[in-house]
Amino acid sequence: MPKKRAPWESGVRFAVTGYMCCSASLLVCNKLAVTYLPAPSFVLLCQLVATAAAVRTAAALGQIELEPITWALVSRFVVVPLAFVGAIFTNIKTLQYANVETFIVFRASTPLLISLADWLWLGRELPTRRSAGCLVGLLFGAFLYVRSDSHFEVRGYMWVLVWFCVFSFDQIYIKHKVDSVPMSNWARVFITNAVASCPLVLIGMFNGDLTTAFVTHEWDRASMGALGVSCILGTAMSYFAFLARSVVSATYFTIIGNICKIASVVLNVLIWDKHATPMGMLGLLVCLVFAYFYKQAPLRPEVAKARELERQRNAAGNAV
Image: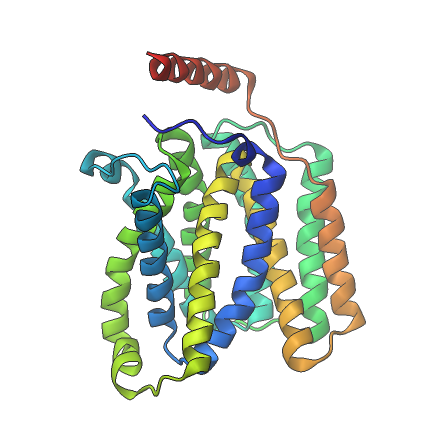
C-alpha cells in the first residue's frame, strides 16, 4: 500500500500553485532549450529520463518514500504514459497545421467537454450555472486574446480533431487512474516518465533528433545549461501535475492548464518580442477573472460516500 501523504502535499493551494509556476515557466525554458539544441524530442526524452532517474536516486538515498515498483502496479498505470505521449505527438502535429493562437482557442473549449465527462464517468455533479458561465467566459477570453495578435487559422482539421479527442481522453483517463489506482505521487511520476521514455527513443530515431543531438550538434555551455534547467523544471512539473490531478477535478485541472498556456504565451511575447497588445492583455485578464470565479463541481453524494468508505478501509489496512 502507498505511504501516507505528507500534510503539506494535501493542500490544493500548494499543488495548484506549484503546477502553475512550473507550467508557465517550462514553456519559456523549453523554447530556450530547443533554440540552443534544435532537437525537441531529444529535449523531452532527456526530461523524462532525468525525472525517472531523480526519483529513483532520491528514493535510494532515503529522501523520498517510494513503494516497490512491481509489474502488477505498472500494468494498471501503463496506459497513462502512453496517453501522455499521444497528447504530445498530436499537439506537435496540430501546430503544423494551425497557428499557436488558434490552438489556444481549441484548447480553451476542452473544459466544456471535460465537465460533461466529469459528470458521466468521474462521479462529479454537473457545473452550476455560474461555473458553466465561467467555462464559456474562459473560451471568450481566449478568443479575445488570439484575435489581438493573429487571425484564426486552420489548414488541417483532421489533426486538430485527433488532438482534441486524444487530449480530452488524456485528461479524463489520467484523472480516473489517479483516483482509482492506489500509489504514491512519486510512483506515478516514476512510472509515467520511465515508460513514456521508451516510445520517445523511437520517435527521436525516426525524426533524426537523436542524430542531431549526438552527431551534428556542437554542444556548448548555453545548450547544456538550457537542457539542464529544462530537466529540473520537467521533474518539478511532473510531480506537481500529478499532485494537482489528485486534489482537483479533471475540468479544473484543464482550466488551470489553459490559464498557464495563455500566461506562458504572454510571458514569451514580453521576453522575446518586447510587446503585448492591450487587447491581448485584456483577454488574459478576462480568462483569469472567469478562472477565479469558477468553482469545481463536487462529487455526487453516493460517490463521495463510497470513496470515504474506501479511504477508511485503506487506512484500517495500513494500520494493521
